[in-house]
Length: 443
Image 1 (tube, rainbow, N blue to C red):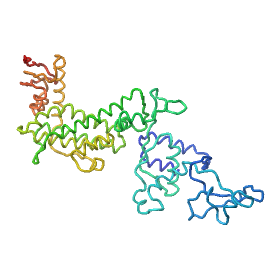
Image 2: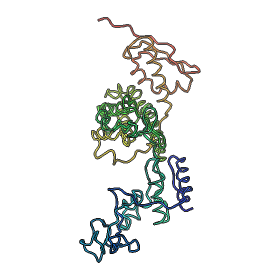
Image 3: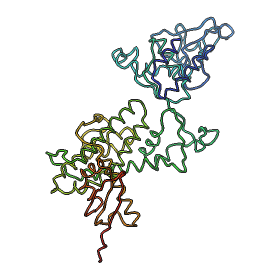
Image 4: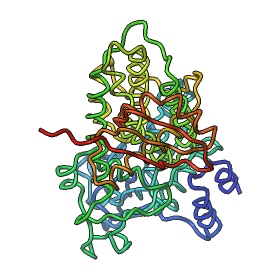
């Protein structure tokens, strides 16, 4: 009952993994054998006295003094005997078995936390916050650790358990040596880098199996692309000087930062709920919007030191970069650390976690102008024109609220679209209704 109670008190991520633990505890019908016949392991600290025929006398078990532990009975000698009496009639014989690995690894929290070695440390860290592990050892490692903590301290050893799924092959079969479908990560790491592999791993939710195809590691390649983009975007953002007295004065910049505040809140909540895949999904989606839409829109203004909005753009870019690097650091650890070192002291991994700035800004401005920019780009593509092609005039139809948002970002929208004259008309839905490309300049 205590084991079931402590399992109920534990926060399981995902929650359905609790059932596996409860089914195992509920199905216990006998004692658990703690000895194993293997070479490596923790020796069972026992000897046996030998009778006059050199046979073990199991009624005369020899135990070491508690203060002498740990000992290895195959090399150490019991009190009252000499080494010459090992294995001879009237002497002693060592227990050759070792402790079951789960019997010893059940002490993981105690060993890490200084139990009976550092009382101050133990009181500080126990019970611990988290046990991360695979689903296949709930009945062994997790159960044995829970049992040990229940017997020693009368409580669960942690507050949370994060249970991962299996890595399976492209046919979603569990990898095993016998099947010959095991993939070692060394070649993948050498080819794509650690950040790419971490990205693939973090993209899988707890409790869900992750398929891996070494011939077509799509998710790994996406992770590598993200790592490279982080470095390139950081280098580009840092090329814009930020005046010492810079403030956020432009509506589009304030909108972007307000949107980023929402990303920080949502990603932080996902991390706190042990859903790193969701946190990555939220952050990555905004990162690509930041790079492909916002950065492209404000770069002309950020370059132009004569523009009254230059300082606002440069500062907004710098603030967003700092926040995004910290949000992505748990997954894309090396690229973010490198980019962080270009403009900040210390490590991104010891920097304070980002918090919402709380500045004034309307997220609708960024979202609506992004939709308009997509429409402008699509119109150029349909006209089989380069995105750099100048536009003499363009008309965007949109609801009145959307037009108000677009007018707040109209200069940046004209700059990125290379539009000379941009007109807005009211309509039920946002759409680019007319676009006239500028005549080609003859060489």
